[in-house]
Length: 412
Image (cartoon, rainbow, N blue to C red; front, side, top):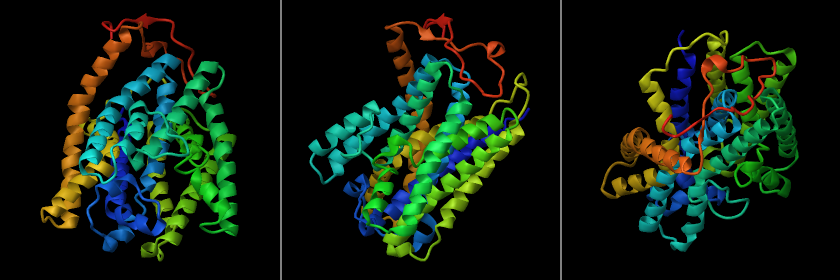
């Protein structure tokens, strides 16, 4: 049977490229209108791309696409793992790339940045440990705010698994209601206030500085969970209603942030807030199509995803982490050397993709192996239950109880 989920890898890659183009060709100069600069300002070339604004300003919606895919993928992982296995799997997936990317960004900021080294030390520690910086303080790189939301979601899933009672269905309902209420309030605030009124700023704060609360983005993770459930069984009417609520809630969050951009950045004042909504909706439709096409009996086997598509998916994470500081620094070097600014963007993007391929193919596996050996020194590693013994998908898609069997590192 063909594995339609393999299409999620190129979708994730396209979203990462969209975010990269947004930061490098739009936010790198448009932040002046808002007055909230990103960390890339330390290494950015003095280049403007106003002619490309109409096509690059909405690239940030790739983050909302990431969150939906993340909800889907994490639901899939949690449905087959014990709590310990889930936590270990997330650590092995996240830390190797972030250690490489954060160190590269740290060194570039020291070498090419205009701020003192002391300004970057604490943000570097936060990045290396994946501990959110809180509402105040600086990110090592502006893109790291999404990791705060991801870590909060992973923690929520882990806690649900530890209860042995909360199912994916419960979790999806909770996030759906929790985030929908906030985004409905956000739209109400948008109807009666404008930037920079205090209620407007409070709502806006929960998108980036307080992303770990999942108030604005919880709906995207919930939608991903619902799509995963739909890939394994038919949804009930109540669940379809929840899906509709997450769609409306997600559209509201995108509309609010798009309206903020259109209001504060004159270069795109004539654009429509519905453009990023349509891009996001198209991505969600593709994920839903994959889920529908891939629905099958639990015992049926699916084909392996093509290697080149899987590679695109693996490149996405280091590419997202490195494009803003490392990529922007490369653009600066190329422009200073006389390369056309637009050509410089595409040249560095190609270079960065090759570097990220080397990272995910060669460096990350070595770091993961070292992590496994280190963890094995403190105890046995959790074993993955054989496919034949995994529970069938039920109405509630319950999270499996901890696996009693254990394997040593050598058995892995």
